[in-house]
Every structure is written in structure tokens, then in C-alpha cells.
Image (cartoon, rainbow, N blue to C red; front, side, top):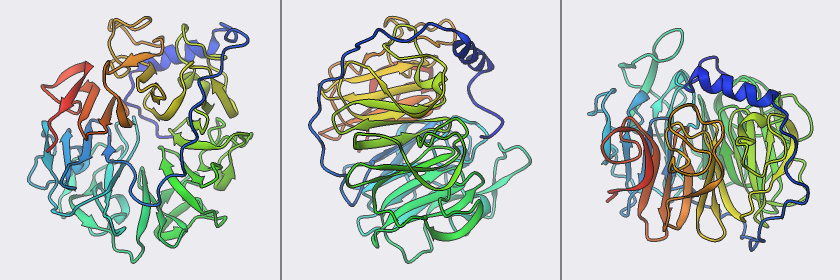
Length: 429
């Protein structure tokens, strides 16, 4: 956990007050969500075509090239010709003609955390750009990035650079100063900085080259939060490693682990999404479960959520009354892609990251610790949904990209504003 957070101090105070309130459990007998058909195991190639680092967004265009818009902290735009402080409301191509099938980016809501974006080619090669602390991505640019880290400047790679490894990958996950990937040899590797066990190798500290994750697990999907990494097997078993003091590993204990531990769930998962203090997952029957620090995923007085503020070291069912296909978690807000086609979001809504402020429980006059789950992006059905720290984007089956939420740097498309409550189409080529 890094010391400086982007969220205002007022939000932190509101969350702490929530943890102390005793509104009691939700009504007994809350209905289970509609059953969703069990999805097949994730494909053994590709992955997300959208990536949302803090204050920015990247997407794969129709021609397979990568495009980025929004802010350019740490060079996440992938274009050395663009000024570090320059914002862009419209997508611009990265400085590479390579064609990609998947993207991954650092997921963090902390303004002092280095940001990195990686892209995967069809043959499994990985190109990365952005923060390059410790030479994680290879040779960094000669010029340092503007310092936003406590203690001084750090190096960046502003031009997409091929990782110097013979390994080829089927999935990538990016954490702060950390890369993980499922390779074509079916092993999972991590390297970089893992102070609380995020490398999963049985050791804490630094790995300068891809190192096998302990346990020999054969994962088909992989995701990274700020302090936790999780892998999912073909039979839906979730394993997590890294920081676990708040129960965010889901194994029933409240301590970190430098090796994968099995999430204590009775049902198979279709997807798992770790954050920094908590983790959420969607089971194959469409139910949403979360574990770890309860003050984030139990927001909103009007939501049908069990208890607000209590930590949960094992998965807890969230009775959202919709069946979910996938979930994304941000800085105190959440969105699910529902079985019925709608996108349902809830939680903190200071920047309209969970949708229009006119919904029950949502306002724009103060920090929103209470915002009732409800549909956003009315009339749109997304085939892919990604949630960033303060904004979210969805992609339709036809390939159109829409974003909403924080838009200070144009990361949600259109002219920069404080918060964009309507889903706006981003003109992606």
C-alpha cells in the first residue's frame, strides 16, 4: 500500500465513517441473481482490448493498432513526440505499427504510482511503454519522466519497446513496477518489484527476469491489482497472491502470501478482479462475490449489500439482483456487465464514474459514499467492459467504444470536464 492516494481526504473520512456505522445486514432472503449460462473457459490467447491507466485510456483499433487518449503521465500515450503534460480528447496512435490482440495497464488510484501499458501481439510477443522503474521494460529513455514519485525522478520508456525475453505470452497483467504473464509453455511468470509477495515466486523483493510463479498452476486468465495478482484455472478455481492483510487473497486468512493461495469459494469463477484492498469475482452462474476490505465494495445505504465496513477474508455474495457476466473495480466504484445486456454500476460517484447523478443516492455536491446500483450507458450493450480508477469504458460487439466518468484529461472522450455522466462514443479508427 503506497502512502499517497488520489482520492480526496474527504472520501477517506467518509469511508471510515461508513465502517463505524451499524446499519445491519440486508434483508434476509435476498434473491439470488438470475442464473447466467456457464461461459466457456477463457480463450488461450488475446484478452482485453481496452486498458485504462489513471487519467488515460488505450484501445486496439479495427486495424489492430493501439491508440491512446487522455493524459500522458509516465508516457502512457506511447508517443515520444507528445509532451508529458499534454492531454488529448481524441485517440492518437502509439509510435508503433505493430498489430495487437490484447492490452493491459497498471490499475491504481494512487497519483504517486508509476503507470505502464503493455500490448500483446498475435504471436505472443509483448510491447510495453510508460514507467520503467528499475529497467523493468528494458532500456529506458535517456530523459527521465517528470517526477511524481516521492523521493525523486524515475525513468520511462515513451516508445513501445519489445520485451527482451524469448517467452511468448497468452495473457499479460501489469502492476506497479510488476509484469506477469501466462506463457505458451503454460507456466505463469512474474518479474519486477514484489514487496508483499506479488511476484508469487515464494520470495519478496525484486526479480530482474521472468520467474515462474510457484505451484505449477495452469492458469487460463490472469489479472493484477495494485498489490494483488490472481490467476484463474480452466475449471474456475481462483488463486491469488500478494498483500492480504485485509483478507483480499480470499483464503480465510488476513496476511500476505508470496505464493498463490486458493480462494475459498464453493462455486467456479468466470472472472476475478483484484484491486489493492479488496478483490471481486463473478461466478459461472452470474453471482458477484467480493472479499477483503469491506468499506469499498459495501458502499451505499440503498444497496442490497450484507454489512457495510466489515472485512471479509473469504468471498461474500453481493445480492445485486442481476446476473453478471463480468465485473470491474475502480477507486470505490464498481460496474458489472449484466446478463440482460445492461451495465450496472454503484459506489463512489464524484466524477460520475457510476453514471448520471440523477440516479437514486447519487449527487454531485459532495463525496458520494452512497450511490445505489443502477444502469448506465442506457441503450448500449457492451461485449467488453473495463473500469479504470475514476472512469470506465465499454466496447460493443460492433467495436464501438464508449466512456464515462472522470474526464480532466479527455480520458472519457470529448472536451475535458470534471465528470462526464453520459457514455460518450470515442472516435476510434
